Length: 279
Image (cartoon, rainbow, N blue to C red; front, side, top):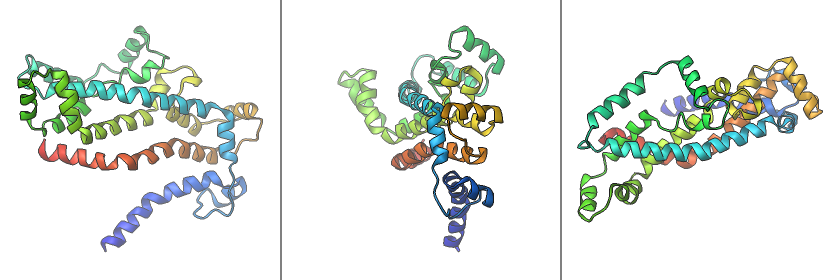
């Protein structure tokens, strides 16, 4: 019964992905005939991907998303790890006030309109920095990482202090090598957050050339005939039907994160379990 239930559950999860992939790979005639619900395609057609990559916008959005990952994740991990390490020092002066400040800011914000005015006034609006700086530190992720760092014996840090090591040396040479599973877990959180974020590009970017991949996908999902005609003029190719075009864009945006996840899954599971059990 367990095997049967899990097999059924896997089919429920996998079938939508199969339909989306097959819907982007078949001809327009077959797509219309089957209504887009295709389990075994009769023929393969790459016109959807030729159109998307030929138009150029999706490649530009892909580069922006990759650049956002390459810059945003290391910066966020650096700042969040430093914050998490500071949160493990309960004897630090002002520790209680710091925790109150962090928890308050985690639950309360000034609202969307004041935030938009702030972004505009400090010069982040319509710049690449908007994707990186506002989300550079995550208090929630810092709390998770703090729980993991608390599982490292404090005697290691005390021994290093007796040997004359500074806090920076303790963090980089002792704590970080022992905290690889937790750091990998939080890095995955940041990477998925950056990759899946579509709202920032929609709300704080006025130029299409600066949109990340997920915002471009949303634009395709809500595509109208005027935009489709404009894309046709740029590619000089008859566009596929909008439904198959959307499926192709979904495949392109989902595939990279799916390929990366298996390589960090073991750290992801181990980091969550250790932080939860011993934190």
